[in-house]
Length: 505
Image (cartoon, rainbow, N blue to C red; front, top):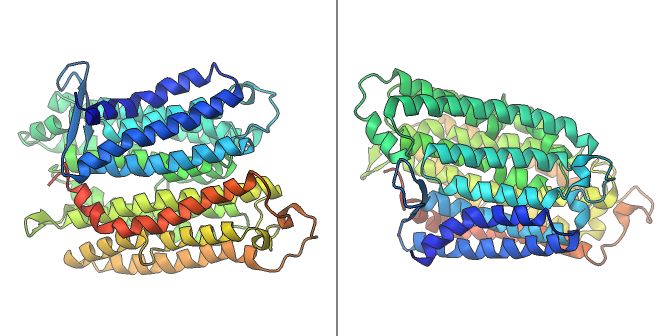
């Protein structure tokens, strides 16, 4: 076993073991262990990224059983991208939570089992383990189990926010369970048809089937279930309350990386297991139409908000739309030996990865201001930028990424999506991207502009107070996200090469 193969197993198992251990430890030790595990996970991510960068696909079968019985971990380009993004978000959020315990909900009164138990740390580490397992799993059953771990821990993380978060958490739970049931029904139907759950064996078995009815039904069930977990409009109503009510260290996790887990599974199913199912074109166009609606409706709803966290949450609804606008382009024909859909695929992944970093930064900033000022109402935050210049700079850098302006990863994603649309003669995609960008500029300006205006509150109010002590480290966390939002855009061409390792074409 090579060290890279060992790293694959460690990425899936180490956070889970640490999650169990943190439940037995006192709070200070729990925070220290969380930081240590975050650094170790980032360290184990590095050899996987290095292997994929050199063009090598790393695989590991746990327990010595080959497919379809064994647990198959596969470190390809898609896995490497999201492992890297999740490690970045995870390390920064873990440090933020360790420095500012209030951000984890630790300040809430321990009057219930939710807040009296060691909530944040075991749940976050368990969620991280599930995320890594989702990215690496090579069969549908392990994808399902990993996705369940992510969903249940994410729901519990929302509930850690106290009584005001319990109703959004319960709504999130219902949607997560319903989505899981639909996904499991599709997986079961697919297993009955093909006799296997391994992604690549499923693909080869489907090539031999003459009747596509059952595979298409399975794909439809899987797609609807995962779209619910991603929060594609109109299945988005759980997202905004949950992401807004969650503690300030949880919201970046939910919007930054948790919803990406279902997106990765969806891409695996569409492009690896079920790429040749006749009739899937109509489903792709349906997803594309819902994506257009999400971009427009999510942006308009963001413009109507008077609180910062809901505005950022509705922005997520809008940004999700771009990912699904790419789906009709994934099925187009070949050009120079590679499918035209590969450009749309690269753009989709770039948009999702860029969104993870930028949105984690904006949610961290919004939560920081809410914890410090006691509110996230934009009228009450007027003038807060006078004492938070670093925070405002970082928010602006994250906004550049969401807008898709040059040198950000968002620009790389939109450019590749637009190029794929031109190659496929789907000109409507250009209109959607242009309209969405203008609307994004409007709602992001609405969120940031009040912070730059002259304060209308007394000088001794919380919003006007200077930043001191550990709070400066909270601002630095947002700045790291801002710098990463811009810096990752410089790696746009490298991202395309990375995604070719283990790609479906």
